[in-house]
Image (cartoon, rainbow, N blue to C red):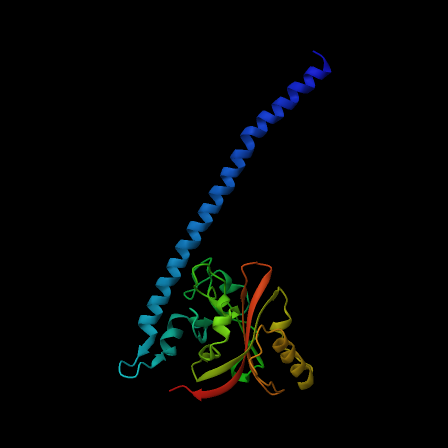
Length: 257
């Protein structure tokens, strides 16, 4: 057999192998994606059940006034890592917040500490509520079903940020209720700058928070001062290389009843 004919047979053989291999690989990839989506959906469902149990056991609603009270003793019995309760108006963010000794633990564990792809909403491990840190940073996954920080994308819409009712964010702790006023909302490529908690002096800190303010899609008319305390919420954008961020400044603190 000539080399030319041999070469032709080899090419046809390679094409034949490719004809079977490529569809097989595609099926494997498709199957893996389906399994991942099914698991993700299942674990979202588990987290909804966890949240329903938390609401039933640790939330008290006054039927006459409609006032809602969080029982932190019951929350801490469920999870000693309980940090507080976060509420952002006109989003689905109305959750207990946890805090671990690192920023990885609750990326893939829920409030009960169970393995879960949806994770939970958690405070940066460096935050100390007792010392009134200047920047309280809280993270959560951008879940497609709108749970965790999945609805935080709303803050980038004109309908949300032009509504004054949405400009107050509440962080309730065991000892007090903190009210923050939104001063900046934006999307930005992944970075660590806005999660900074160490500043060499007050002037540098004021430069820092004014930089955060300058990034905002809307000017909320908030004048920042060097002794201000801020809250930072962060989640992935639809483009996983970007982050959606909200900053708010502490305006009021009332003791918890």
